[in-house]
Image (tube, rainbow, N blue to C red; front, side):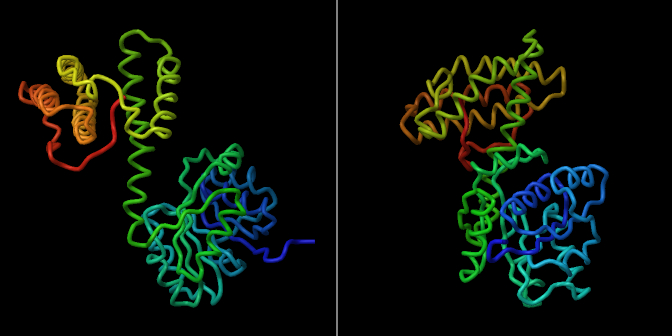
Length: 316
């Protein structure tokens, strides 16, 4: 016998997120009634994670579903919602949730106008589109946004997928998403840059060298915050910082690279944060700034970072 409150769920977009969340909802005994999948990769993903679920046209999915999950790119979301509204597809009482981090429920205003219920359910997780993502959901947090009366529904759906819901106000969605993108996406860039430098000096498997260091650093930072900060910037070793920056300037000058720019920006941000927390004395902060500014003034590309600008977490 099915659990009470089970829904017919339609998945629009069998990308890495949509297929995984559809599988998680199915595991919670909701019935996935249809999925849209255009590319060969999406069709294969749907067959793997949602076996037996029919691949349908978008409008057919909306017509059949009590809960429609819109798992499409941010820039495509508004047009999709508007287009379906013009076709009269949205139904009164229907739940319509999107998985975009950037948007709350405002972008679903055509849904609300049709009498359907808008929800924003964004998983703070990076997905592979494979079954292992279902296990990752158990440690995942979702940023959820909904009208106050509908928030318990959004939270319940997330809990049923095995994750933890955290309410995000409509006006805070962009800052929320920027925080996640800054932490996750830029971490990949930093790791790639560090790996490149190590590989170029003969380290055959840089991931073996970086893995233990970065995992320990991340765990320490999550557990202890900025009190875990270490390294030459936090110690005020201006000579070491200057040597790093000069070496990276020479490296990028020959390769047309982007590593110096990232190093300068993060070192300046790290120095500001270290000083604001009393880890650096004023003279040490000035020495670090001079070391970094000296590389720019010696002919390196100016990274455009103002010393009094916004702060960002950095340092290791």
